[in-house]
Length: 130
Image (cartoon, helix red, strand yellow):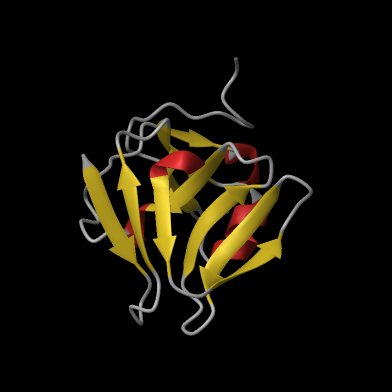
């Protein structure tokens, strides 16, 4: 299956092939700041399964992760692992914004206090235990 998406202005488009590795909602402080939102709802894909067209920019938010966004409109699109393995694709930028349903919340120890998690999904204070 191929799912497509893009930024607000349409200058960046992407295709994601196959199924994601996982679909999670991250509440860590870096994601909050990078997304300008209480959390980052994303589908994690192998980078080899993503095709991106258009002019993007990157910001190194940590040693391991680049935040990728449209140079024109600023839409935040991906959390891109620098080691070449996976990329988190923001759920809201898929053309079908209901294509994926999150299965768990991670980094809830850093969740904003007024966010209420009443969806019944598993919650982890940090990352998912191995």
